[in-house]
Image (cartoon, helix red, strand yellow):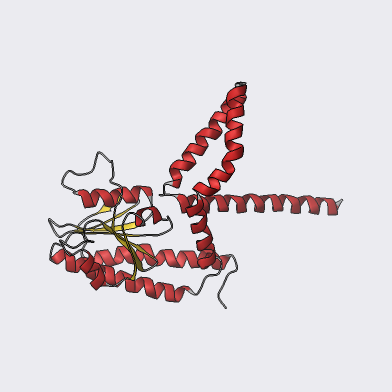
Length: 273
């Protein structure tokens, strides 16, 4: 009797672990495709599944058959359409979420990047050189990287300043930073459609808010008119930042992210030996 109860308890625990693992995988997939064109495709698939359910519920046999055929033969199409996202997921898996290195070098690299960004931002602010740069976090930004000029360069303050010098080929648009590297320059970011944005804010600020509404990136803006430095995250705009405040915000957002990611995987038993 007790053996049966123990077996039943283990069965329940196994089902709970199964559900949690599937939920986590779905969450990671959503985070990977969030902010990319794949989101629109996912919405289309949801609509098709909804129509299929309703047609079955109301007995619309012809429509139900069409939706069934669409779903059946659409699996291959989904693999083809989502190929960039699937490749990105496999790259992230192999890069180190499960086989991660020590976070101490990562923290050091991130700290150096923060210093370079702050130095460049203050240099450009004093000279009123307009700038727009986004720092990728969990949400992939490859779709926006592809709209610009690929660089894949080490992040330095000198390079950032040179990119935004007026009347140069790369100064118009955004720089996208990923894993402490400048991935691309002259990138196009989506403009915010928020009607409550102040009229005094220009295109750079609207682009910074727009990208922060669809991804979790951190975006810096240097105003060409006033020389003020602003930062956006999660649809929020932080204006008129001095050097100390900018450094504090970047450190809090970026260094904490590295530490949290490390702690999450160490809790799962993947500690570096």
